[in-house]
Image (cartoon, rainbow, N blue to C red; front, side, top):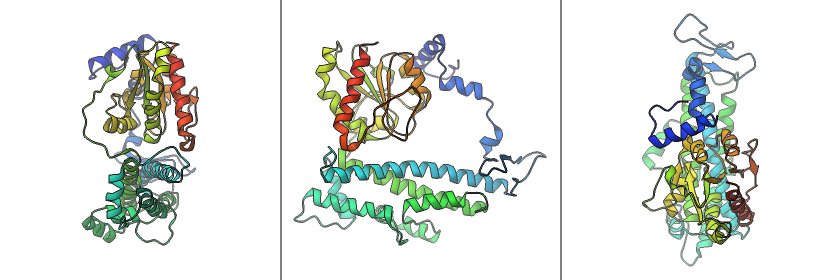
Length: 387
């Protein structure tokens, strides 16, 4: 067990985990140490099946891969593939929010526009007329502008980056060849370029990394934030609480963990609606707490308290007070399901991309968000009775 340089409460929870024979991320890191030096330097490659290759940049070992790739190019190629993973994650999330907003406007998903001010501010940026039009009509045109970016093949600049990014930076990006059109095309091109037998120039590869960072930042993060502000309202500065003490011993504690407020907003909504069911089961109330990114989403819009960050997610389960941990996408450690089993915690996955052994899977679909969220909250209430 590793407890050095951690707060007192975390140390106490680590001690409990140790007594119960539960290994945490700290324990697994200690067992893994010292970690692979080639991996830390980025000088190992499994891109093709002639490898794996390892380049020794310091000693007398190999100076190139079997294909002849240099250590600098190997590091850059590995970094590009890692950047692709991040960009694909954030762009995929933004597209999911975009499609949910489209369905909401069409009456196919039970969400509404709470951020009318954001709609009007974006309409001004994108030159969308507002006079004599409803918020829904204006929003629908913004959705069409965003959707165009995901299908375009004309190589014209991406709408969201060309309208949202500072003009001075855009000129610099154009000069460097970093402006992009369709984010999916850039992700595909980067994977192709980083495959065996393609780009082996470190500078070229790193420029591709920079382009993918723009894809991630503008058609991923910025687009997602804009659309989430439309759906759920623009966040405001608020005062809240954080750390494991936000769990309540006599309440049904639901921890929302992941990245997607499309799910967590509905969990919070139905937790409030179904509070009487929790009281009937013997609880004081339903207490929704946040973990990681989706916790921040709830905190900055509703003041929901934050129980943990990513690397603390196992420890709040060790309290035995979490009745359900509901996860969506990104930052979900597979070991959470195993820790949850030790305390009869309902560990619930909701996204088809995130299937974890020993988890209970309750599919969450925006079109059936209310029914799905009620099922999840009810599972937490049932778990409360098994503490």
